[in-house]
Amino acid sequence: MNRLYDVAAEALLDATLDLVGDALTVRMADTIPFDPTQANQSELTDWVLGAGPMGLTNCRITNRALCADPVPFTYSGSGEPFSFVTALIIYRELDGMLVAYIDTRPDLAPFSIEVASDLTFTWANDEVIVL
Image (cartoon, rainbow, N blue to C red; front, side, top):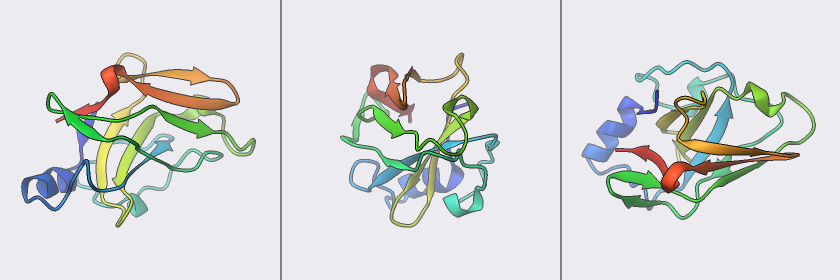
Protein backbone atom coordinates (compact mmCIF):
# COMPACT_ATOMS: atom_id res chain seq x y z
CA MET A 1 0.00 0.00 0.00
CA ASN A 2 1.49 3.32 -1.08
CA ARG A 3 -0.53 6.22 0.29
CA LEU A 4 -0.49 9.80 1.41
CA TYR A 5 -1.18 10.43 5.07
CA ASP A 6 -4.45 12.32 5.70
CA VAL A 7 -2.60 15.35 7.08
CA ALA A 8 -0.56 15.60 3.86
CA ALA A 9 -3.61 15.25 1.62
CA GLU A 10 -5.33 18.06 3.53
CA ALA A 11 -2.18 20.21 3.41
CA LEU A 12 -1.93 19.72 -0.35
CA LEU A 13 -5.54 20.83 -0.76
CA ASP A 14 -5.08 23.98 1.33
CA ALA A 15 -1.63 24.69 -0.21
CA THR A 16 0.32 24.44 3.06
CA LEU A 17 2.43 21.55 1.72
CA ASP A 18 4.65 22.08 -1.31
CA LEU A 19 6.00 18.74 -2.53
CA VAL A 20 8.59 20.48 -4.71
CA GLY A 21 9.50 23.46 -2.53
CA ASP A 22 9.45 21.92 0.96
CA ALA A 23 12.42 19.81 2.08
CA LEU A 24 11.21 16.20 2.25
CA THR A 25 12.97 13.42 4.13
CA VAL A 26 12.71 9.66 3.64
CA ARG A 27 13.41 7.19 6.41
CA MET A 28 13.36 3.39 6.54
CA ALA A 29 10.82 1.75 8.82
CA ASP A 30 10.59 -1.69 10.39
CA THR A 31 7.08 -3.02 11.04
CA ILE A 32 5.35 0.36 11.16
CA PRO A 33 1.79 -0.29 9.95
CA PHE A 34 0.11 2.39 7.88
CA ASP A 35 -2.28 4.54 9.91
CA PRO A 36 -3.63 7.40 7.78
CA THR A 37 -4.58 9.41 10.87
CA GLN A 38 -1.02 9.78 12.14
CA ALA A 39 0.27 13.29 11.55
CA ASN A 40 3.91 13.57 12.64
CA GLN A 41 7.01 11.41 12.32
CA SER A 42 7.53 11.74 16.08
CA GLU A 43 4.48 9.45 16.50
CA LEU A 44 6.37 6.59 14.81
CA THR A 45 8.83 4.54 16.84
CA ASP A 46 9.97 1.49 14.88
CA TRP A 47 12.67 2.99 12.63
CA VAL A 48 15.35 0.76 11.11
CA LEU A 49 18.51 1.34 13.11
CA GLY A 50 21.87 1.84 11.46
CA ALA A 51 20.76 4.18 8.69
CA GLY A 52 19.62 7.73 9.27
CA PRO A 53 17.06 9.74 7.34
CA MET A 54 17.94 11.03 3.87
CA GLY A 55 16.58 14.03 2.02
CA LEU A 56 14.67 13.58 -1.22
CA THR A 57 16.50 15.45 -3.97
CA ASN A 58 15.41 16.91 -7.29
CA CYS A 59 11.71 16.67 -6.36
CA ARG A 60 9.30 17.47 -9.15
CA ILE A 61 5.74 16.70 -10.21
CA THR A 62 5.44 14.78 -13.49
CA ASN A 63 2.23 13.21 -14.79
CA ARG A 64 0.53 13.56 -11.40
CA ALA A 65 3.40 11.84 -9.57
CA LEU A 66 5.95 13.08 -7.07
CA CYS A 67 9.29 12.22 -8.67
CA ALA A 68 12.76 12.34 -7.11
CA ASP A 69 16.30 11.09 -7.54
CA PRO A 70 17.39 7.71 -6.13
CA VAL A 71 17.91 7.67 -2.36
CA PRO A 72 21.22 6.24 -1.07
CA PHE A 73 21.40 4.96 2.51
CA THR A 74 24.72 4.13 4.14
CA TYR A 75 24.64 1.33 6.69
CA SER A 76 26.55 2.30 9.82
CA GLY A 77 27.43 -1.28 10.70
CA SER A 78 25.40 -1.20 13.90
CA GLY A 79 21.72 -1.81 14.27
CA GLU A 80 19.54 -3.84 11.96
CA PRO A 81 20.45 -5.02 8.47
CA PHE A 82 18.52 -3.60 5.55
CA SER A 83 16.53 -6.83 5.15
CA PHE A 84 14.28 -5.58 7.96
CA VAL A 85 13.00 -2.61 5.95
CA THR A 86 9.22 -2.92 5.56
CA ALA A 87 8.33 0.61 4.48
CA LEU A 88 9.72 3.99 3.59
CA ILE A 89 8.18 6.95 5.38
CA ILE A 90 8.37 10.40 3.79
CA TYR A 91 7.91 13.45 5.97
CA ARG A 92 8.46 17.20 5.79
CA GLU A 93 11.78 18.10 7.37
CA LEU A 94 10.60 21.46 8.76
CA ASP A 95 8.00 20.09 11.17
CA GLY A 96 7.91 16.30 10.79
CA MET A 97 4.53 16.27 8.98
CA LEU A 98 3.96 12.77 7.59
CA VAL A 99 3.58 12.85 3.82
CA ALA A 100 3.64 9.32 2.38
CA TYR A 101 3.93 5.65 3.29
CA ILE A 102 5.75 3.54 0.70
CA ASP A 103 5.41 -0.24 1.15
CA THR A 104 8.66 -2.09 0.44
CA ARG A 105 7.16 -5.51 -0.28
CA PRO A 106 8.57 -6.60 -3.66
CA ASP A 107 5.11 -6.97 -5.21
CA LEU A 108 4.13 -3.41 -4.20
CA ALA A 109 7.36 -1.44 -4.06
CA PRO A 110 7.72 1.34 -6.64
CA PHE A 111 11.49 1.03 -6.66
CA SER A 112 14.41 -1.32 -7.12
CA ILE A 113 17.05 -1.94 -4.46
CA GLU A 114 20.79 -2.22 -4.85
CA VAL A 115 22.45 -3.76 -1.80
CA ALA A 116 26.14 -3.61 -0.99
CA SER A 117 27.48 -2.04 2.17
CA ASP A 118 25.08 0.72 1.19
CA LEU A 119 21.51 0.56 -0.05
CA THR A 120 20.03 2.66 -2.85
CA PHE A 121 16.31 2.96 -3.56
CA THR A 122 15.75 3.81 -7.23
CA TRP A 123 12.17 4.84 -7.89
CA ALA A 124 10.45 3.19 -10.87
CA ASN A 125 10.21 5.88 -13.56
CA ASP A 126 11.54 8.27 -10.87
CA GLU A 127 8.01 8.19 -9.36
CA VAL A 128 7.95 8.19 -5.56
CA ILE A 129 4.15 8.20 -5.31
CA VAL A 130 1.33 8.89 -7.74
CA LEU A 131 -0.92 11.65 -6.48
